[in-house]
Image (cartoon, rainbow over all chains, first blue to last red; front, side, top):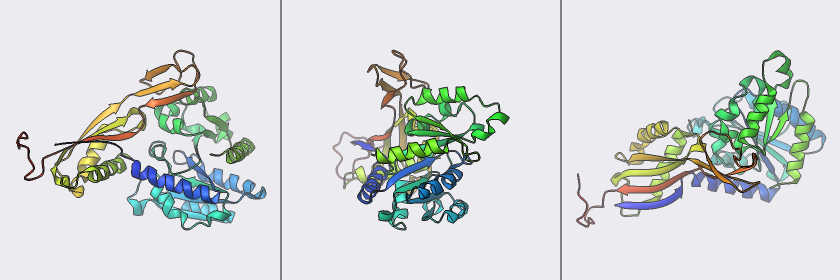
Length: 221
Length: 127
């Protein structure tokens, strides 16, 4: 017998993401999903961004996604903000943060007191791009050392994000990286994405990133 | 390796789509459409599906995957076009603001199952 169905295979995941979004809306929390390859600088970006937001009296929290270890949340601990370390190992070692996983982390946060919640996704340019978590914005990082071809190799990530931070710009003089080619490849995949060159080390581009973030927060959804 | 998660989601979708008189063990084929943009490797998805189908009580289920090519529309001039490479630029006007119409998402489209005991209409031959 034939059983015809037309069903989104990820509907359960998306339904949970919509529940997350409703919770965020209820408490006025602006949520940013930060994605990149391992080692592009997601945790460093948060280490640099959060103190500036605190100076501007914007309260933050982080859901720190990793397959295992608490190393990243230990790095964020000195910032004195709520950090929920959520390892995917108990969930089967997923290669991405799932909406159920964000949902489970929310009970550890005092949402009414949080204005921006960052979800630091698991380092991976493929899988995290696939899954909606209920976030308001998706932001990705690509470090200069990763190669100009990455937008063409991992198009979904570049398609899904509203901003692409080009990190480790301080390394540019030491590399053969072709910044024009990299930017043109990003534009080929997503002409609407905001490209923001940044260096956590020198502070280059940090203010432009902050301005973008705060503008998006006021322009949500 | 999001294929394992997707395989598990397919099996869950199949289970919850079955009429109450059709046991999961009767499922013989599961048809899904996968968008080319989803970066799902069909062989890996099949491998993952086969690895976990027994634990979902569907040991005989075969996964059949149809890849859906990417189709876009230019937000500037409304031209519609298909792409084989991940270059989202309108061939008509050169604009880079392009929306994806097809080729993103994973859809369960059909389940084939043996008729439940005693409900065969006589037209189905059991092999």
